[in-house]
Image (cartoon, rainbow, N blue to C red):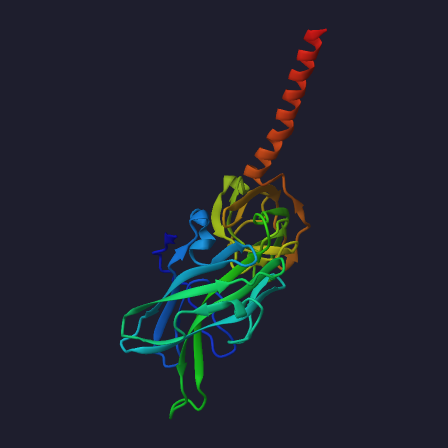
Amino acid sequence: MLAMTLLFTLCQGVDSSGPAASAGTRARSAAEDDRFGIRLLEAPVKRRGDPRALYQIVDHLAPGTTIHRRVQVTNLSAKALHFQMGATAAGIDRSRFTVAAANTASELTSWISFDRDSFEVPAYGNAPVKVTIKVPPDASKGERYAVIWAQVAAPANDVRNVGVNTQVGIRVYLDIGPGGEPPSDFRIEKLIPARAKEGQAEVSAMVHNTGGRALDMSGSFTLSDGPGGLRAGPYPATLGTTLAPGDRAPVVVRLDERLPNGPWEVRLSLSSGLIKRTVTATLTFPAAGGTGPPVEVRSNGVLHGALLAGVPAVAVLLLLLVRRRRSGRG
């Protein structure tokens, strides 16, 4: 197993409606001074190059397989905190990773257990927890989602009339099936320029998940050869888009309101884990409050496209060699 030492600081505390959906999180509880976090300590060696596997449990397992993952709960407060561990159902709805209310059961959550469910962590201390996922032999094929969470309860008192539970969580993307893992891939199909009434420019990239695993999209957008030779960026793609296999959804990049309309030469690079695709296009932004027509991309997946482009070239070369050898025999 590969030790994971990065502490992710993406934070989102939630109440009893559900745990934080981010992969490695910190939170502040309703007690205000109670701060805590959770992170993944290890990932499979086979996924050591996959950024997602460093902070999410992403795996492919055959039915009947059992795996163990270590997570670390961190108390960032000046007093001891009591934690509870749990798992809740999750899914993908309208291109968003959605988390059910705490303790909502699912098939996947029934496979998840912990070496300790309830424990105390001293001030500024850490506590490792071993997570076990045991897939039954008769598990059906397909990808499943859940969130593993650590919770601190803030009971009702003179200040709060209602008790509040705050959770931080780690996403689980688990694919089940015999043989190898389904391939992951996606295609950027078109770009749509727009400008809000307030003047801010944005670009929506329509992305199609053409693979067999869910994707969490991230990326960057740059502009060049604008009016007067202007350049701008890179601008980050808005995080939070999760695509189930077969889904199509826009990934939005929000830009500066001072950007001229163009035309611009633009370059968009999107990635999910090890999969990266890059497209280029020429586009012009509309006036404030408008949406421009979809712009077809000139290249789709530079690295992927280069590999595909090489296949027919090799095939043609081999065919020519065969023909020349045959003609020589005559």
